[in-house]
Length: 222
Image (cartoon, rainbow, N blue to C red; front, side, top):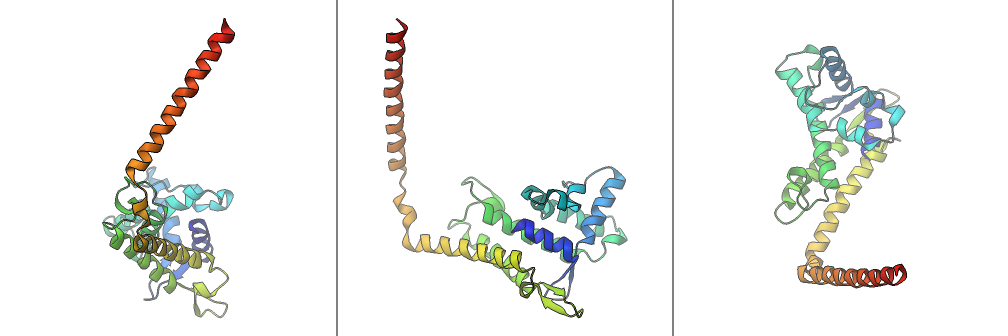
């Protein structure tokens, strides 16, 4: 979904939010030009491969590095601190990148020790995680593009709707799975002593196998 959303964003060029503010691909290109000109990167991994993504369109990391808080921070810094005119009006694009980045981290969270947006969904983090997913859904539902007659139409009603519907479906699914598991308390059936017992049994089996192999080696070696 992340790659498809990047493809649509780049191809369309301009996405219009529900409040009328524009999310523009040109800011990504301008940031790349600035960093190439200055010979440094403003704390992000943006490079030519992210702009000309069609040559490597199957690489998820290129899309993930594009929809990142680091790129959003660089755009914001270029507009507010450096006052570069080519970044004027990039606030909506900055928020778009941050929202998608946060939602992707929540959907991709799998490490029980993860922190921030990458922390697993659990009672202590559920309100934050679900809030991020619902915010992303609201943003994606409200996106519009210019149609053939130059009138704005909802992006989810066009042929380019796949990443929009896909992201929303993923978010809804994760929320539903979490709520179902918590309601049925299935997570309680996974107990540490049961896991520890199984690991102990595997270790014992391994020791028995090693002893038998050692005896065979000595027998045939002699």
